[in-house]
Image (spheres, rainbow, N blue to C red):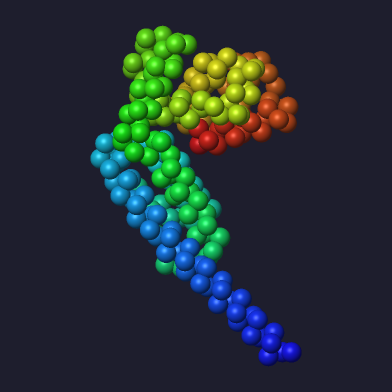
Length: 203
């Protein structure tokens, strides 16, 4: 019985190791592709893009610490399966993002300008690439749409852009929302949605 138990344990460990090795190989391939794309973006957009900044935040957080000062992904030699899964997911989302390529960002800016022109004014021609990316990501966002029922969408967009420019803390951002709308963010649902908006667009 003990021999069979040891055999089963060995088989499970071998299977886990093989699965981790496969995941690591796939992740390193994705990271190589992402780093090449990050290089191209840095040459065109010196301060980075919305997609690359979001990726940087995710890979700098917690125990990952896999974002270099040069704006690249640097995988550790030894990583747990959990870390590999987290990196794999973050890099995959970056590569699938419309705003992870130069052409994609240009297309997004043009479409965003056209969309905003219908609701704002011709001054949106001055929209920066960063602002265009942020506005683009807001369109169709369920949390944004819910808060936009309480605060006009154009005002909510500007609140978020101002919060980004001023490097707001979460409390600062909540205060901006309350000051404009007169709403209390003590409502649990609104508070959670505001928190998610902050994490997605401001942080």
